Amino acid sequence: MTIFTSGRYGYAAALWAVAYGLLGAAWALGAPGYPWGADDPDPDGALSILAGTAPPFGWWIAAFSALTAATALALTRRNGVRPAKGAWGRVPVLLAWPITALLVLVVPDSRLMMGVAYTPLLLAAPLFGWGLGGATFADAWPWPVLNQLVCVLGGLLLAAAARDHGRGRGNWFTPARGRIAVYVAVAVPLVYCATRWAWALGVPLGVSARFLAEGEDGLWLAGAYLATFGALGGVLTLGLVQRWGEVFPRWIPGLRGRRVPPLLAVVPAGFVSIIITVAGLTYIRWTVAGRFALEEWGAWLPECFWPVWGAALATAAVCYHRRRRESPRPTAAVSPRSAARAR
Image 1 (cartoon, helix red, strand yellow):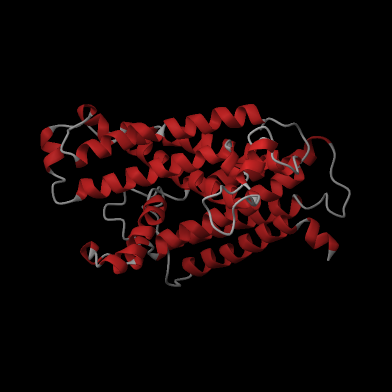
Image 2 (image 1 turned 90 degrees about the vertical axis):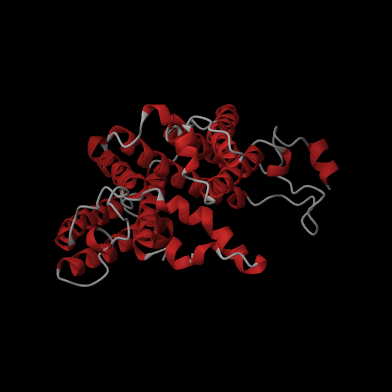
């Protein structure tokens, strides 16, 4: 039991890989549910890089999963077994991070962000009688998109195992870098927000008047909603370096003066950093493919900077987590005097 507990992420990642590998083999043998290709509701195959694949690709999924399982188990060698020394000891980590990048950043596409962004709207719609054109959770979260969540989960488990394997090697994520990362994460999405708010108000910022007219059926109101969602996320990001990010403020009944659980900030920030990076990479791929016109820069250029936003948010979250873990009391971001005032 002790060995399993100390290597829990490696064993969990290996278990995930075995299960997903079996699923890939089942698809290759004709089982239903293959999440790409003809069964993917992506209308023109432009979103996923695996859109052109067919169920026999499941054998490659099974092989990839076997490599992932072996890597995950190798990352647990330090737990109860003498770890390999020298270059061989670094091989599992060197394999783990590219595999993680594939599962977390390459396999998913921008629909993951859209599903997350529209979920609050779908939850609120029945309360206010909004029809939303008949859109449902099944539209926002079809199986191909849920499968992306499954892949992200596997990648995160492997990343956690790799992190535990290499824990204690340097500390790049300092509070100073965390503050810079927060400011970058707040500033980058503001360009996107400005364009979508302008379109909702009828101002063709970064686009032609003809392009703007194409969204008069309410499309730009949806864009303004997403922009506002992003702006509010930027405000919450400030909490990673502000007093109210470590101690609940006075205006929250029942929680005022209590310390904010670090994972309450880290988990949402980490997940959002993934989905906005994935969405940004999708736009970059479309831009390279020539899907956008230069004169309509407002429709694509702001999104191409989202990977910077995602990287900054992830950095800020890690710096926040390390600062909270290493300091049992409010740190420089939360002075003792301010903490006392919050109570």
